[in-house]
Image 1: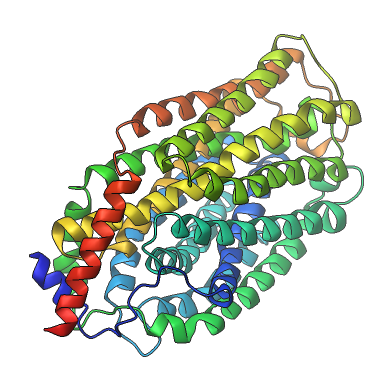
Image 2: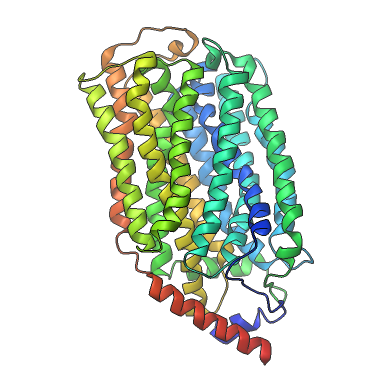
Amino acid sequence: MAVADGVAGLAGAEPRAVTARPSAAIKLSYCFGQVVESGYLTVNTFVFFYYTAVLGLSGGLVGAAVAISMTLDAAFDPLIGSWSDSVRSRFGRRLPVMLLAAPLTMVAMGLMFSPPAGLTVMALFAWLTLTKMAVRAFASMYNIPYFALGGEMSDDYVERSRIVAYRLLAGIVTSVVVTALAYSVFFAGEGGLQRPERYPQFGWTVASVVLVVGLLCCAGLWRYAAGLPQPEDKPAAMGRRIVGEILEIFRSPSFRVLFLAMLLFSSAAGIHQTLNNHAYVFVWKLRPEVIQVLSYAFLFGILLGVPLTPLLLRWIEKRTAAAIGFSMVMIGWTVLPCLRAAGVVAPEGQAALAWLVPMQLLVGLGSGIVFIAFPAMMADAADEHEHAFGTRREGLYFSGLGFAGKAAAGVGTLVGGLALDLMRFPREAGRQVHAVIGEEVLAGLVLSWGPLAALFCVVGAVVFMPYAITRARQEAIAGDIRERRAAALRG
């Protein structure tokens, strides 16, 4: 499509198409929407342990269920992104999709933690696959337009990072609240994570919080969102346009680099998170109340990255900040796990915190930098796309980021599950408090939890190296787009 055509498609919008600095009230309302993504991601850390150690499914079956559900769900992400790009309504093009998705996400999340009693192995496998697919698909219906809305809120190089930082801060608060509910309320006490009756109440409680706060975000943003650009003409049918739109975004070198790098980084995070509770319970022998300390250390590391990243971006490029974040995560996942596998250090219980807390702080700080830099870079890449092709594709761009994260998380879960099976991790251990497991199995578990995940991260860092949008290039592109839009509104 020609550039003029793409600009004309925005002609029906209010002149306030993009603001350099949205008000604090708008950013506060916007950040509430992060509860959908962060709430799901936090409860998701319990799914693998619940279905393997508590309900008795093999690691391979649980990994396959999660990989199948996430990969199929991720295939729908471009459809959701294109849909949210093309919606025309008095609430703007993003909010109608989000309003539909919030209640569906709540129902699917609650069901995922409530499998009927007495299911056969294959029936339980099918339940996990279908509910996991549903919760991810409906969460995507909320998150993809939500993330795209954040990319539309400003075209300023640093302000975009601040908006992501607001969102990430809300995610940290959400994760802290859900983690505290999990370890201090629902799973408190010795062996709490190994008691199946506690999981349904936990799932439905978090699902209800997700619904309420997700709708609060929509209520606070609807006036602002209604004033952002919308397509003036009715779009072509989805089936006729979607393939061309996907091919179009993959013509962008910046999108390809960000997509593949996030695919690999999320695979690494998926492996590590999948095996977190196994490592904490069986290698480091931590009680649930102590495990939450490590979750808080990780989140505090991310919290440190919230003000640090925008500050860094005053002096360095986003790609440099992301490379620093990659390096921190790789170091954190390598040093302590290798020392434990080699038998150099083997602390257990409270004594392990002195080693694990610094590790999680470092990984959290590096992850925080990556989590802020990547969405901000994706918004810059979407501007580059409009400049080159004359079309706004934020929805598709952020669906690509979501696709990479979810498909890779599925790969990470599958790899983690297969690793458990390959090391012959005893399935009955999950239902035995203080189970004794051989040192060879524990060494394999800790190496899969750390260095194996770090290896995926290394490859992701290499793939990321060609990313080329600098501050100067983004500012030039944004200035040219503003001039084109102004000319279109005048003409």
